[in-house]
Image (cartoon, rainbow, N blue to C red):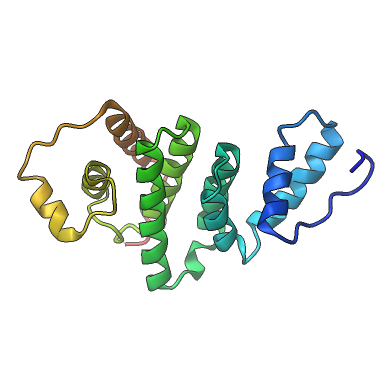
Amino acid sequence: MSDDIAIQEPTSIAEVESLILRLYDPVSPAVVASIQEVLQRLQKSPQAWILARELLSRPSEKVRFFGALTLMVKLNTDSASLKPEDADELFSSILGWLVESAVDGSSSLVTRKLSSALVIFFLHFPTRGHPCLRRLLCSLYLRRHASTDEIAEFWSVQPAFEPRILETAIVFATDLIDEAGKVDVNSAEQ
């Protein structure tokens, strides 16, 4: 593709991945702007939930970062359209991706973006996954999604956490406090 040709809409996940990676290539500002425009349209599309899931399963950290960013965009623009069972599934998925990212040595950029996505989820669905910090700590310790019973049992032991796990929990708690402070209590879902 030359710099003066418009970027075509991708028709597959592989093409989306290619566009994301192209943002990191030495291309003209016009090409970058055109790619960003296409990707932003995709992030706001009804299929973006599926797109985010697919991108988060890719090996490239740049692509996974964009997948987490897509989750944040969708949560901020379309969270009201989620059915309760879809919100529960999304919560489990975000928590799973965050735990995986924290324990597999992924870039801290990906982990932080997933932490931010989980914070946004809790701000839009404050009753889901309660208590959020305990659930996150227990899930990080177990390296998988923790059940409600496991969370209750978890606090009866004194687990030792690896530094990367503690860092992830602290980033999440800090982001949650920062973002919760910005929420208008009168307009928040009770």
